[in-house]
Image (cartoon, one colour):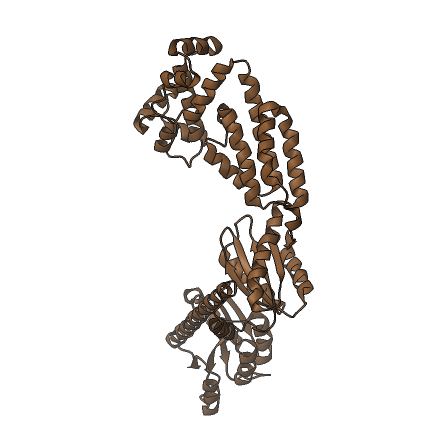
Length: 503
C-alpha cells in the first residue's frame, strides 16, 4: 500500500516515518508533503491508499486539501491528526468520512490502532469491490453466452444488459482472440481486453472458450466496422503473440451468433497464412472442390511411383493454400489418411521415426501442426524416412519384407509366433525360417525380440508412456517380464534407461 504524510512540521513527518513499522501494516511506499497544496499535487500522481494529514497546514489546510482529494483520489482513506480539538474541524473531518482522528501530541499505541482501523477499512473495501467485480464478470459471461445462443431469452438479455450497461439497440461484431502459445493467463488476457476496449470507448463482452480462445462481442455504431478493424490492429501491435478473427457485422442482437460463426471461420484462415495476425471472414463456397478425391490418387502413386509423392504433396499443399480450403480439421484428416496408408504399406518405417511410436502418435502429431506448411514439412519428413526404409528393405525378398511388415503391425500381440507369420504368408514354418535367415542372417524369433526391444527403447524415451503401457505395446506378457528382458539386453532397468537418456 502507498502512504502520504502531510504535515508542515518536519520533525513530525520524519518521526512518523521512522517510529512506525510501516511494512508490518502492508505499507511499502511513503511520500511526504509540507503543506496542503504540495500534498494535493503529490496525491494526484501518487494515488495513495492512506493519507495521514494534519488539519492545520499552510496554503491548504487539512480539510480543504481533503475536500479536493476526495474528488481526485476517491479510493484514498483519510486519517486526520491535530493538536487543536476544534469542533468545526472535527465535524468537517466526520463529514469527509475520515477513518479516524488522532490528537497531538501523538501516542504511538493510538496511532497504530488508527492505522490498523484504516488498513482494515481498505481491505474491506477491496473485498467488496472484488465481489462486485466478480458478480459483474459473471453477469457479462452469462450475457455473452446468451447472445451467442440461437434461442435467446429476451427477458434475461434485457435484464443483463441493464445490469452490465451493455447496449441493446445498436450494431455488433464478434471477435475470436487466440493465444497460440497459451502462455498468457486467461484472467489477465480478459482484463486486458476489457481495459483496451473501455479506453477506446467501445462496449465489450468477453468470454473464455477452449483451446486458448476468447470470444469478444463489441457494440458499435452502425456501419462502424472500419473503426473496429483499426482498433483490432492497434490491440495486436500491443499484444504481439495473439491472433484475431473478425466476424461479419450483426445489425441486430439476433444476428450475433452469425457474427460469431464467421469470426471462427475467419480465424481458421491462420492455418493457411501463419505470417498474418488478423483475419476477416472470407466466403469459401466457391472453392468447394473435390478434395475428398485426393486419397485414391495418393494411394495409386504410393503403390506405383512413391518417388513422385514429394512433388505431388507440395503441389496439393500449394493448391489448398491458394484456395484456403478445406478447414484445418479436414486437411489434418486427409494427410493423416495419407500417413496411415504409408504405415499399412511399410509398417517398419515407423520404427525409424523418433517422435512416433504408433498410429495414434502420428495422428496427434499431424493434428497439432499449426499451419498447412507445418503439415507439408512433416509429410516431407515422413516421405523421406519412408523412401529410406523402402530402399533399405529392397535388398530383401518380397516374402521377407511381408514378414517384417507383419511383425511391425502385430508386435503388441503377446502370442505372435512363427506359426502365425507362416500362415499369413502361406508358407511352411521350416521354409519361411530358412528364407528369412538366408536374407537377414537371424531367425524370425530373434528379429521379433530385437524389434520389440528397439521399439521399447523409443517408447521409454517418451516420458508420457508408463512402463506397464510400454510392456503392453511391445507385446511383453507383463511389466516384470519386460523389465527382466530389458535388463538382460541393456544391463539397465527401463526406468534407469529413461533417467540416463533424459539427462
